[in-house]
Length: 306
Image (cartoon, rainbow, N blue to C red):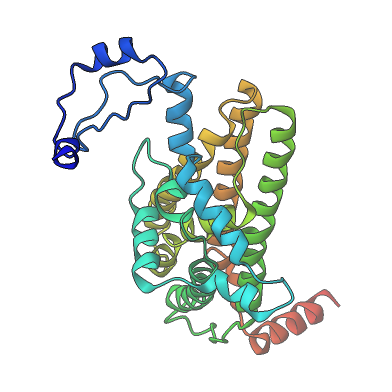
């Protein structure tokens, strides 16, 4: 019977009494999973910096995704390394195009659309489509302007394709390269600045050019007032995307340097749009006169002078 008595349950007293009797005892607290502690020590630092980190995409989740992508990256001399830059689906491309057409104040384009999976597929084809849109629309515009004139003979200007390609792709690659180098340099001077990667900057510039594709098609309309209104609309939309994207990255820098950076970005964007309109759509009429008509005129002028 002694063995049976040893197996009986023993009632324990209050936890505090037990600890007082045996201070060296180890206790385990089992809490309800649904309950949350009332007081938790918060992380050091103000909420302002947390908002900046959230706007720029500097939280731990983004760092984890970037580090995970770096671990899986292949050597740069392999095809798989460059294949990752085009690993994007149609939904993501359309979503980024929509974001470039409808910029939201206070929202960062890189944070919302690019940082999770930056790509070159969208920027490459947007630039290619824009090149042909500008070249073809420029030829059609000049044809419609001079349509009905007996002295005009239409000759397709295929050189406009190569010129447009040089301008668009140089802008879409060289300007982001210069901006990336500038942000890296300022990051070494001012520790609070968080720089974007080169691929992210190329993405922003590439998708910001999408608005110029329908604009270039509408430039066929032979009315200068309509063309300049279209330029201002396209410039306002795409310029606001660039300004709202890069302002959070430079606002912690010197005030003058930050403002000068944003102004330079917008001015270069304006130079691209105005330059394309002036060169491809507002060319002088003498450039379109046929050589067969210009030659007799030159001969007649030379005979009169002699």
